View 1 (cartoon, helix red, strand yellow):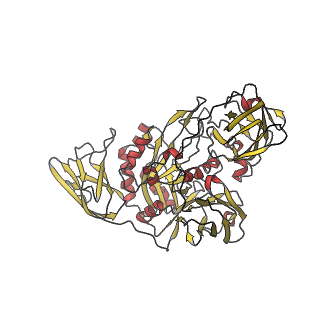
View 2 (cartoon, helix red, strand yellow; view 1 turned 60 degrees about the horizontal axis):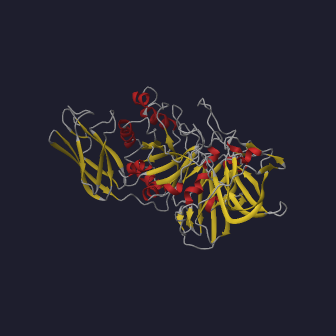
View 3 (cartoon, helix red, strand yellow; view 1 turned 45 degrees about the vertical axis):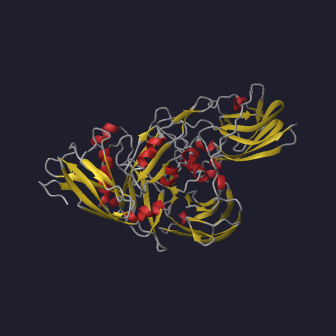
Length: 596
């Protein structure tokens, strides 16, 4: 409690759960944000983080992280006197089979400002305005404050926890959108952002950095933070091309413990939303245990359920911060572009998300329902996705309950992609099959071949820009599934082909109505590589499911003698989107390379 005229802690007693992060202040006459306050904690049950990162950092506030079960204390020392709050904690609740469906927006901003100084002045919108708007909307059960780390301050990061603590409808969780701007050039000298932004929830740390290690250090201030890879294939401010998280390199111990989600967009077909889903399997193949989210990513003042149709459905025991925190840590949530689909599915009798025993037979039971009686949102197509983004099974859905069986003795995971009659998708929580993931293997040493004497044709017509070594000089096909033949003029031994996507760039004006949806559908999603010695008989050497869209994809195969190479496009991003206006877009290619 706060006593005017008496110095005290804002809380004398804290009762909460292991994993919680909550605010505390030293208040009273003579105490202000610049006061010299020293914070400490017992370290076993609780930890404390004070802020001193910038000129706006308040010295009289701290975040308490609850690390263990039992009793402990938090202490503030001021002018030689100590003020203590007792901390009592219990284990985070474990949800049983009685679970409910709740709708959430896990990525929202309390201001339109992207400028640090303007944001700090609170001239446009603010945390109370955001919470009031979402509460008045009345359709969300959970929402997350996730202002950009680059523009927020320690003061405002702390304020998020303070406002969230006592907001019950909707439940508000505090966080930030951390930004990692790690950029490096490829072999052509073109820079790529091999990083991006991560929404962090329930974490006492956040970061705006070009150093992955710095972000990871920020995550160590909290016992059970939740991080979400935000818009993983976005075209953003910092670099003109598509961002690519380097998931195998990012699969460090702390990242594997922290990351629980990957964002699929907002449920709208605009900009690069149709690209995000290509990252799911890449992250799962790297060993991440995560599920999918849909979020508005709104910057105000249009907040709430109606801003964007895509929502995250969280399956939790009750409507409380503790229950939602537990559900997010357990990956019991999924993305639905319509915001209306209720999904429950089990494999071999275990309800997703779950770890299965290795077997060769998987029996799926898929149960569907809707939040509102809008049958246009009921899925009509089911695709079961497995390792490396391959479709293990595809079928139509005609009933609310679907049962099917598939065989595999290699699968490491499965997840569902459901599509309704309007092309809107729902991505399920995964199930893991009890098999080990790939160990980190160094890529083979490859030597690019001089292609200056080669010729390239596409569907029989000359296409020299395909092999001119300039990814910016892209080739546009006349069809969506062209066949490209490269004549190397003589037989040689080769072991890899490089496909460089055409450059999807943000408009140089960075106007608010910029879009990439006119360019993104032409990216390749799947293609086959064939080799021939005589140009007549071709042998298939690789089926490619392309998942990295912002930089060169190098596909290896057993070293082979050949004179001719045929690249057969079988699917574009537009075809795979199930969105009518995109499915017939012609393919585009930045460059094709050959490696010995």
